[in-house]
Length: 258
Length: 187
Image (tube, rainbow over all chains, first blue to last red; front, side, top):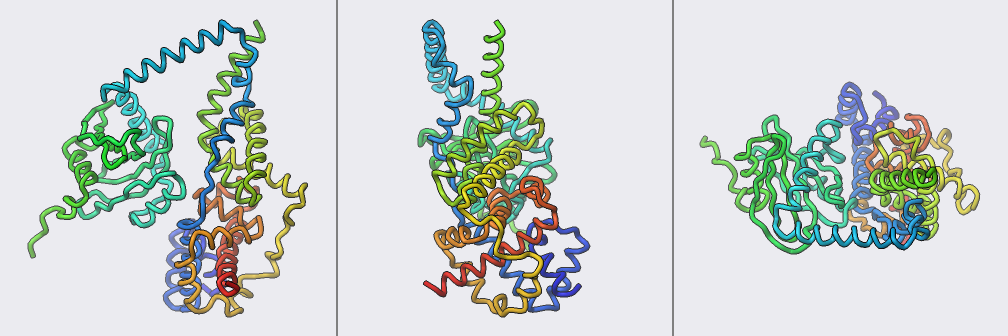
């Protein structure tokens, strides 16, 4: 491989768009060519700088409202008869009252979220779309979320404890954007959904089961956490405990005596 | 009777549109904001693109609503850019004559200070540098680095061959280094 070929493959290589054969060729060339190696580092730095630093401009709320107002269903309310408005108002009242009551005990609304969490997990597995950012490095995964969400999910590395990080993706749960961190344990995939809690409450681990999937839910430090997997509930609880209190996890499994 | 069924269909369509397409509104706005470099124009163009998307929504049967919406946003923005002549849409860089070899021949790409420069570049600097990229390069940069689309998806959205995605992205990254370097020097 000559330098000009190597140059043209640097970007595809960083973007995981290169087949194995050419990736190996490129690696070999980089080992022998300091110029191309420097170029590779520059390309990498440029890529990382934009990913980590460039502002992701979120759509203003007013824009969404403006768009909704022009869609037919929203327009219609202006010309509907009074009785219709009254019945809509009554229906809304029923919904509001119901949602307030169903939110009071932790089970009511959590049931619904649990269903959504399982669907999110299954959907990601079925569509073969587990990760938007595939990396076992939390220093790559965390900044990626910073550009996508209005909150910063804590990303911890549990590879030593037997739960390596696979990556992350953006999901949509409970009518809001959620960070989904993907971990693996043996051959089981764990999806850890995180989003800011509505109230700054902390709750202990709550273990649920839906359609054969185990779910562990808790809240602390202003964040809601939902871990879901086909993993047995013992191991999933162990995983959750380490996410909840990373300082305990640092102790890790017993070290193998030499 | 006909009218009420029609409006019921509209309600359903709006509901589906809200669930399927509108979650990607920020991606749409970010792309438009990056392409036009202007927040109000971006809002107007996203609104226009959403109207268009709603009109053609019955024909959308794919599974990637984000790519679908961004294609429409991208085309709406390009039409506007061309009409408004706000920006010369053809790039200053001729992709054939300004080859990678020539870039390499300059001493621009040698030495490590550029890497340090980029590592220490702050948000404001990177944003300004991005804004200085010619629009075609800015486009692939946003779709790749901020939206994380694959080369194939970018080719479909920007309607360019796969090879062009590859070369534009490589060039965009090099240009970015060059711009950051120049900005630091002028500062």
